[in-house]
Amino acid sequence: DGGITQSPKYLFRKEGQNVTLSCEQNLNHDAMYWYRQDPGQGLRLIYYSQIVNDFQKGDIAEGYSVSREKKESFPLTVTSAQKNPTAFYLCASSIGTSTWGREEKLFFGSGTQLSVL
Amino acid sequence: DAKTTQPPSMDCAEGRAANLPCNHSTISGNEYVYWYRQIHSQGPQYIIHGLKNNETNEMASLIITEDRKSSTLILPHATLRDTAVYYCIARSVEYGNKLVFGAGTILRVKS
Image (cartoon, rainbow over the protein chains, first blue to last red):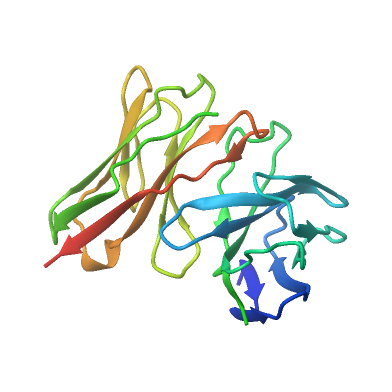
């Protein structure tokens, strides 16, 4: 059953702690994305990756880091530098075509709710 | 940045058509309009997308004006399960063609 799996569903962070959110897809998609959503707000792009071993910053990359060592995996680390990390985090993927972005239908995971202790 | 403007909320009676408007007056000629919806605490779900022609699938219809400055998503027979936040999105050329989400429209379907 193809799709995107995010884990854990709920995560708690202590002050000064780094935490890593997992995102795995078995859709054979080249492009992967991380979005942050605050209550009552739309989604804001944190990082995205068009291909393995390459990624770019989105709107709000400060305090976050990512890696893309495998096509199917795009983990997000929320570092201690992110002073307001409490939010709902969504991972997505898309096919990613040679004509990048012309038709980029996104498939989303079910999200991770991160809270600060 | 191809921004979109949507009303913050709308109500619809169960069984009736829900018409959700979206303005995207700065959209470029080769930018698609996408619609997604998000049920509380879940990931957004793709609904439909289009460039200039009207589109229909099993979930909805998308009507795009001839000048492409606005569009309407139509759910032909809304059910209670259609209650969600609906996002109209145009690709952002500024950010290398990624999709930029706004606040969306909260659609409440009432019995």
